[in-house]
Amino acid sequence: MSLDVVTFGCRLNIAESEVIRRAAAGLDETVVVNTCAVTAEAVRQARQSIRRIKRARPDARIVVTGCAAQVEPGAFAAIPEVARVVGNSEKLDPQVWAGDGERVSVGDIMAVKRHAAQAVDHLVGHTRAFLQVQNGCDHRCTFCIIPFGRGNSRSLPADDCVAQARRLTARGYRELVLTGVDITSYGADLAGAPRLGALVKRILEEIPELARLRLSSIDSVEADDDLLDALANEPRLMPHLHLSLQSGDDLILKRMKRRHTRGGAIAFCAQVRRLRPDVAFGADLIAGFPTETDAMFARSLDLIDECGLAQLHVFPFSPRPGTPAARMPQVARDVVKERARILREMGEAALRAHLDAQVGARRLVLTERGGVGHTEQFTMVKLAAPVAPGAILDLTMMGHDGRQLLAA
Image (cartoon, rainbow, N blue to C red; front, side, top):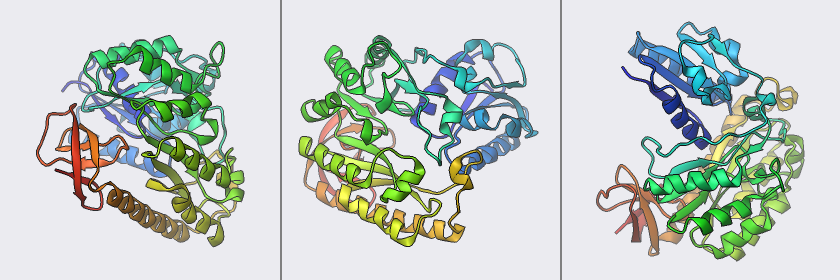
């Protein structure tokens, strides 16, 4: 058995798993589990996966890395099936994968000050490529453990970003997705403090052969003027923004230590929609944050219509040890689950309304494996017939099934 990498969590982890595949390519009979720590459920799934892998491959050497391994190295080292635990910074170092190494190789992530370029030119199983331009986060939202798994914010210099984008485009990727933990903080640690909008414009200007550029999750309060200008005037920047909103209630946002307000989020969506009328918005929302009342929750429900959200990622609040929110008065678990269910139902209704509005429209669809693709607005499309992945087709949307559009 050759090296296998099992990836949980975000696009950042997907990109980093490709670095691991290269760095650890010489290892045999090894499975690397690249974990996520965003919720307690994500950690539980990683633990389950480790045990399932060991049952299926009793001779495999299992190495655990990623955010959960960085935050809880001792807990993963104590799992009998785990041969080694590697930290989030260490996992990108080829020397760490040379030989057996220490059983626990997890350093101080807060001591990492530089985001080094990784020469990735292929992502296994992905039609679009993820370009990591930033890592870490300087903010300390009270519910979030990720800064302790990723460290403080650090950005990839623009020259390296452009070189990596050019390399991926030359390999045939039609769409690149700029990824990071907090990509709208891009550049604050670099000389001259360039912003994300300037980077977006430079990539599009210097790589005219790149068909589509997309952004991963952004923090609306950090969106700069150049970024908004690019959304308004550059058709190759895709009209889809996934927003880290989390709540629609101002007091809950304050207790979360978020930097935007309900009114600010609504105003941002309205502004972007004026600049780019075909834009679609997705958002993260947390159900049952500590102290959330029924009235506060209702304001999160109202936010779906107020912002015109088309897709939701719903997270039942999960107390993470070591975070301030874990010490706040908790909402009963059955209430948390019920609010998450209601939010998901509202999200499904919002998606159906978005799909209804797309029927009859012509959309440029990037084809993917499995007979599906995505529009410019990142709406999934079921193709009438399978097409090789990586093509961009001009298709008419004939209907939908409640989850995806159906193309002619």
